[in-house]
Image 1 (spheres, rainbow, N blue to C red):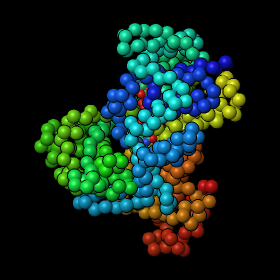
Image 2: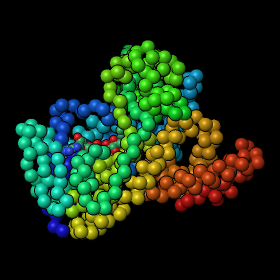
Image 3: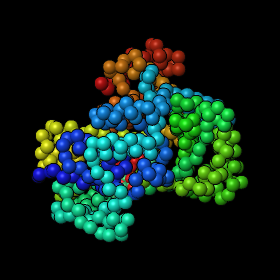
Image 4: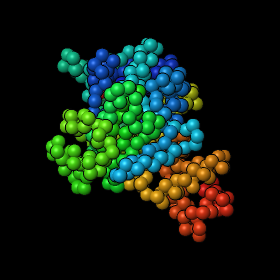
Length: 447
Ligand SMILES: Cc1cc2nc3c(=O)[nH]c(=O)nc-3n(C[C@H](O)[C@H](O)[C@H](O)COP(=O)(O)OP(=O)(O)OC[C@H]3O[C@@H](n4cnc5c(N)ncnc54)[C@H](O)[C@@H]3O)c2cc1C
């Protein structure tokens, strides 16, 4: 398979990053994006305003020389800060000293990637929507939204980086033996704001933490922004206890926050405006296979949309890019070998993080308020601290390492079983960090 000219559909986070990788590898790359240029119009709302960037994302950025630029935009969050209904705070570090996930503005990150790609000579065509691709190697059909005109587009390889509702995938789905599943959560989300301090512009709650208000079946979270504000997200069921359907007007909204999140209400002056003006987002998991049909390939959310509770959707998409880059080198630009290797290597890992993200929703909204769960985490953290070369907890495996997600998923069950058993040891509260530590560690070792 001869590949010289590559058309990427979608100039989101993954499409923009991928264009840099492929251009640096010497390909003729062009990118087609449905929306107008966000550098001129501003980022479009509706998706998360900020995102957690972790180790896999950093590695992918580093390989294209963008780590230092993006570090300037990032606020490290070293741990989670849990807020109880009566305002009590519990802090838990995410990893070892110095390890953090990072809050980054989606719009700013996307614009930096676009800028860097354009500087390398990648052309971006905005307001150009892919309508369909040809799975028999014919041209893709494009719609020029400015002129309302359909036109054909030829490329040696068409890459669908067009997100969770991918049109490239839509065409691939019409071929024989294409597996596809899509499932929505019974929860939606609303984005809200804690502004900076009116007087001095400072952060009104701890800056270097991801804040969580866990309320069993629903939760509020907050991630810091560079301007001193926090983007707050309410994840709640559409119906039932704590349901979004109970918030029918401003009075109900205030009652809802007074009941479940009283500590944050006084610092959210735009709550009603944000709640009633921002859209309610839905949460979907999309799995499909194959990711390559004819000369079309999927990447990022187009191949694997996951729920946001592990903060890994973008990180996984960025890892797709860095792995593809490694495969281009390993197979010396032979795309008939690269494409099968890419989907074989990424598919089990995308499935792994999709499942872990669903499990983490239960942890975030419910278990982080459970003393037994926190105790298990404390034991795992201690073993990792004392035996750093022998044990890595699941959260660290996902967020601070490059171990395959599929392995992390297996470890999730195994570590939890061991720790549940460990809690049954007589006098565990007193002896876990001393007498029992070596035997607990022996059972947990995974490196
Ligand atoms: C609430 C929320 C919070 C999240 N938090 C995190 C987090 O903390 N950490 C993390 O790693 N991930 C997070 N994610 C996931 C992350 O947003 C996605 O994984 C990431 O945006 C995927 O990037 P992408 O480029 O594949 O897709 P997208 O960002 O969806 O970009 C797709 C692009 O394709 C364009 N497009 C769509 N259709 C067409 C078409 N037909 N023709 C041309 N262009 C088209 C779109 O306009 C868009 O620009 C979160 C997601 C949500 C919803």
